[in-house]
Structures are given as structure tokens and as C-alpha cells.
Length: 224
Image 1 (cartoon, rainbow, N blue to C red):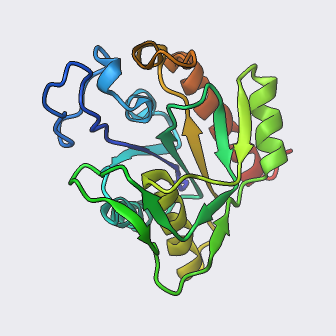
Image 2: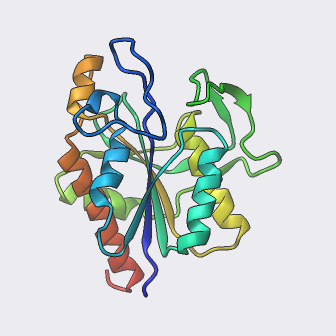
């Protein structure tokens, strides 16, 4: 059996706008409630069962998200891995080029943990880079008619934390596993609540992931 491509998102935990209780990370909201849902969890649901891919949602927790990613690597031994998180302050799919060895956000994770100045891996490298071909990724997504850009700062919250941990795990184990991390826009319904930006429909986000998977399959099979 051919090794799969691993795709990961985050389980949503953002509280609803009416001030009600936060969703249970073990029981994420459905697509009927997009204003509480991280679109990456919905993406994983949509792509689950697709041939040649394995999808998973990671806990929105410092440390635990990296541990869950390591377990998925060991279990599935993928040919490549892509991770996705939501960035609400953008209408673009953003390929992050660098992960920095620093947690530095005032935002709490789902357990209430705040890390405003902490190394992710003590004595680890200052940064890790994406191992995807950045110009090709930008070209492929652009040719699919999708809004895409790249960034050199993944933030100081869970997205950057996972990006750094994933690359550190892969490097430390000397694995030949191409890895890329992407920030995805919010859904239009969530953007309307925020009253800024326009968001990007779930169908379009799904097209982006399918385009990336297709590109990786061709590259890993030796086709241009």
C-alpha cells in the first residue's frame, strides 16, 4: 500500500459571539455553525476518506498538538505532510516560509495556557523553513484562481508552534518528509461577524488543498 499524504487542521475552540460557553475540543461544531468553527477542521472532515490522504485534527493546545503530529507521523509514515490553521486577519491562503522557535502570543490555548515569551524547543534552531517548493506552490494555487501569498512570520501562537515542532520532529528523526504549513482565511460567515475582510468559502479552501495534494503527488511520482 502506497504511503499517504498527511493533512492536519485544528479542532476549533473559539467561543461563540453571543458569549456562550466555548465549544468542547472533543466535540467540535458542525458546518452548520461556521462562526465557531476553524475552517481547517471542516476541511479535514470534507477530505476524510479521499484516496491517498490521511486527515486529522490536532488539539488546540501547546505541546499536545506537536505530540499528536508526531504520533500521526509514526502511525502513517506519510510521503509528505501539510498542516493548516486559520488566520482571521487575511483573505489569502498564506504559505508560511519560516517557523520561529518562539511562543509569543497573549492568546490562550484551549486549556487557558498563555505563552508570551518561551522557546518552543530549548536550544533548538532559531527557525525552520518550509520544505515545499514555494514558487511552485504559489504558481499552482494562482493558476487554480485562488488568492495566495506567502509569509516569513507565522505568528507566535499555535500555528507557528506546530510548524516549528513538526519540522523539528522531522529533522530530528532524519525523515525525508516534505512539510508545509498554511494559514487559511476565515469562512465568509465568520468574516461577517468580525466585520473585516471577506473570508474565503469552504469550497474554495477545499480546492486549494486538493490542488496542493495533486501537486505533491505529481512531484513525488517524478512528474513535473
